[in-house]
Length: 267
Image (tube, rainbow, N blue to C red):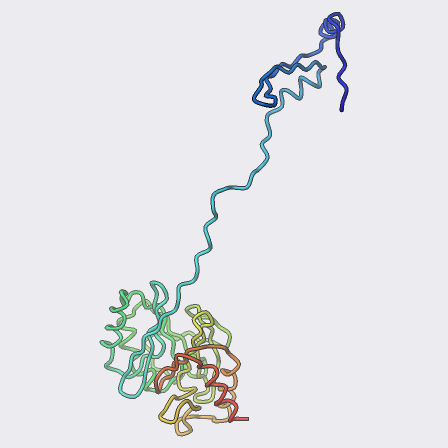
């Protein structure tokens, strides 16, 4: 314990006379007892006593707001005779994948209105490939969704008649929070889109879910079957639950396993 030297009255008065400073403060001792503390010193004591009080930073007790999560992706199938397009809703924004056959804008409108949104919320139109049953309604859709950007694989763009420029996309690009997967073969510029968070792939005509189950692209309408097979193998490397195709019913559970089975037959 540090020793405290007692000062006599004469010593105290001599120190004060030499320019010493005295500091008096109230203190609280154990059991709530209060008393006075007295300090005697030179100019150093005065300088220290006049310093502004420095408050150490403390951790805020207020809870921090969590980063907003990306809204879940919801899909709606728009069926037109023998082909399907898809309306994708994420929060207050919409993307349409393939526009299908002409004369079906009312079907799209019904789906969009049922989602509580409108055509002004349609900001993206994604075309999987150039065949007429997938792009035939493009002009009508763009007439309603005037704020939309149109996307397609570059090799297919020259074959698509569009009232506005089409933005080319490549394997690995991102549109509407989804990954573009290059799946050429059915057509040279065929693309699919993949939403990892929603565990969903839209494969256009890269695959068909027919009466005999899931299978590869139709040989009758496919430009390069060898390349189309490689695209199926590529899709089989992804993990997803739901597969949406242009022809046939959606597969909503175990879809990547089903694609892997088809890919295994192509070895």
